Image (cartoon, rainbow, N blue to C red; front, side, top):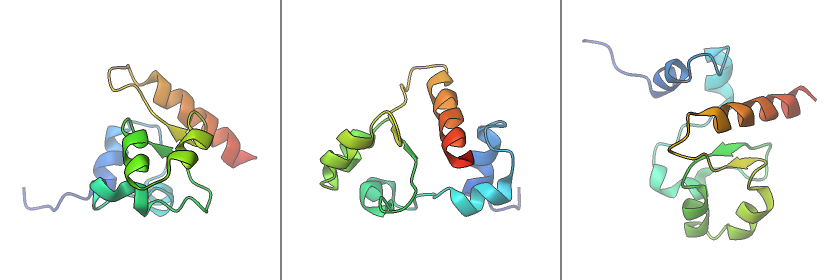
Length: 101
């Protein structure tokens, strides 16, 4: 249609209100350009939150199984791909509560 698709704008729209501000999301949320090596691309030394139904697989590939075990269910969410999305929404609420202090 003559307009280049911006991945973060598309994700923002698909999240349908989970994020209130596109500018904030673009600054704080990392989009993986090479998703096959995402276990190596995340800054786990910083204040991270990571949701991925294949998190264990990709973190194992990146030799980060201990990190997965320590943070799974907290900073790392493995959402059920067959769920209604409630698990992800609950996790986002939990993340927001941690960010607010």
